[in-house]
Image 1 (cartoon, rainbow, N blue to C red):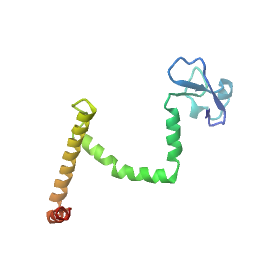
Image 2: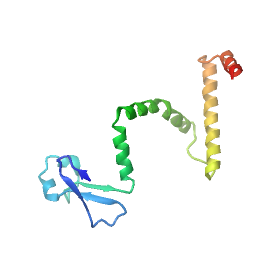
Image 3: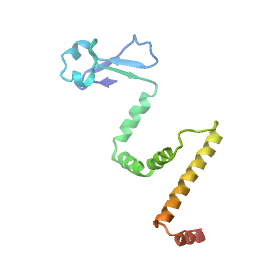
Length: 142
C-alpha cells in the first residue's frame, strides 16, 4: 500500500497490462492538492502514479532496514572501505569480463584484484608509507 504526501491512499489499477503493478491516486483529489507539483508532473492526467514490480517487497524491506542507526553506520564505513577499490579498478581500465561462466569470471576477477593489490603495494613501498623490512617481519611471523 502506498500513501501520497497529502496522506491519500493510492489504489491498485486493475487496468494495467504491464508486468508491473500500478497504483494511482484519485484524480479529483490530486487536482486540488497543494503537493501536486511534488507528486506528478503530468500535464494531461493529474494524479500520482507509482509502478512496482515483483521486487518491491525486497526494496521496502531494505529501506526499513536502512533506517536503523546500525545499518547507517555499516554503510557509512562501506563507502570508504569497500567501494573505492571497485572505482579504482574501473578507472584503471577494467570495464567488463572477457570470459563467460561463473568459474572463469571468478578467476578473471581474482586476477584483476591481485593486480590492483600489487599496484597498491608498489605505490606504498615507493612512497615510503610501508618499509620493506616491515614486510619481511610480517612474512617471518606468518
